[in-house]
Length: 392
Image 1: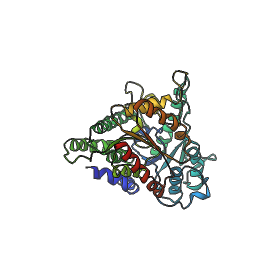
Image 2 (image 1 turned 180 degrees about the vertical axis):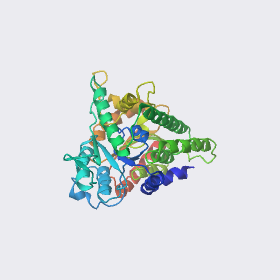
Image 3 (image 1 turned 120 degrees about the vertical axis):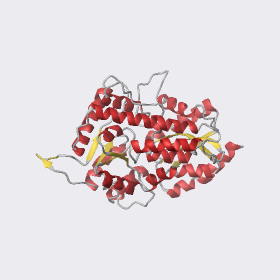
Image 4 (image 1 turned 45 degrees about the vertical axis):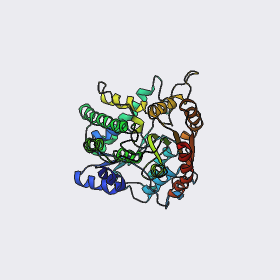
């Protein structure tokens, strides 16, 4: 059953094109977990997480600073080369300095023609989602509500569909089922050895960012039943927690290196996948768009801030989330894999490293990468030594 998820991950561009051809509907690309997928899904379009590749850059150097995040550079390079031309629109949020500027670079280097009315594009290819930096405060909900309403109108014009409250409510039910199934998968990883390896769990979850959630849910039901009865469990390994940004189909190689080194990732905090929604669901008792806003503001993204006090200073908000992920996992160590130039995560690493040692009494390995297969492979010796040390 996991081969179907793997097929979407390994052949993601072709799979989306086939889905479009079969269903005669639009595909909407987006960057970052703060984009409300359910709005896209409610209109019958396919939300597609934009990721990079391990290929050498061909066009990005003409537009982007060389010291920028390798993940963002790779995503943009693929766009300039036309790899993502099958997307009907792209949603760019301001989740970090480089991603925010992708809105301009996309329009300049990977434009798509649009009807001009009174000097303005009738439907711009790139939609800029101005997401709030602070997630708490009296005006935040209303501000984000208006941003999501603008996005809703953008999707409606694209799909020639009016997204009613009933349609959006149905989409939220599908997504809540997805969260429930992913949580069931996550529970299987608490066992020792886990019924599902860290890489397999990542692969299953990552596929949900590329395929329709309803299809993924049906596959998940069969998959979970199959896994619960499997006899060929993953090999027992040193139980580890993994924290890292932009762990997509390329950077996920770190899971394989960990497993090949005798480790086993039993929980993670990564910027791709639905791991940011652990324990969070849509409140279907609220108006659906309000429910989308509330859930989004609960997503513990490193780029966001909340009200801080002397008792609960920043980044305790993020640390409290990490504690929930680590609790009951019986981890023996933690690996933090941060992509170079990622200030959002880089700022919190010293705090997390100290807290993991203080509260869970586990060693922490901090690694840095540049989103290339070569540099990822260079981490192998450090991971092997760390796993061996922790396992003694």
